[in-house]
Image (tube, rainbow, N blue to C red):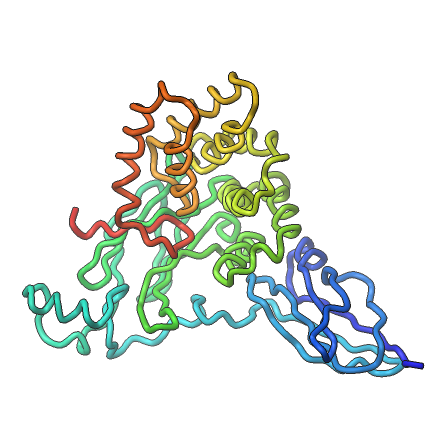
Length: 367
């Protein structure tokens, strides 16, 4: 008869929500799932043996630990708060000689040199970003390749910043939060990061105090959002309520909509849409729900919201994508001219958007 032991899984984070809601999966030596749960709960009983424990870390990355559960003993897995992320800001490389301009591949270098845009070898160029202008936010330089941004209050539109990186000019929507009174809960930051393929880019991230946003951001970057749908659903409620982070709530709502789990949250989406008129992503989300409402009055309300929201710059790339999808598919022939007009306006973003970026990041070099 097998002798059993216990497994205890915890996470190192100051967020009381994440201490008890981050999901984990336990697999036995044959890689079969033997338990699923959330961290911080009661320790579980398992047969003695080797197990792998897959845990969602506070920054959204997936960690795997191999542990031995001893007979009549307890094995512990404690996930650190700062888990390595190969594309995260912690991985910003030192300045020095590089073989690529930010966001440009080496074959494009040769084209630029032939066109006379670049002089000399690309190997001698250092990708140092420069902040040119900001709108509705106040910047603070952290280091030569990083900035923190705080909101101007009250916000009337999505905050933006324009940077140069090599020969490129990039305009980014910034997820600053105007509600809190402390920088750790209000700020976002922009860092120069290097992709695994060696390309340098600018990337927005959330201040550490916005821990639920940090987790959602990491889940998206690690393609793990669907595996943590319950976590996201609960986090979204908290971001709209207790933590007062409408940009974070909008991000969570967009994720849930993409997973088909927003349909029963019409009241939540309505509150987000009507309470923060400066945030078009919330109105776009609510319009997506109203488009499917059987009542014509609700559909008309949704169309009005959509047409209003799409006169302004979205915060998130998924917000832009959803808005364009709704404008194309809305079941109302009479609104076609207005919807076509809005699509034309959004095309100025979509044509040069970085579709791998979570926040809307647009190449405006030619402007």
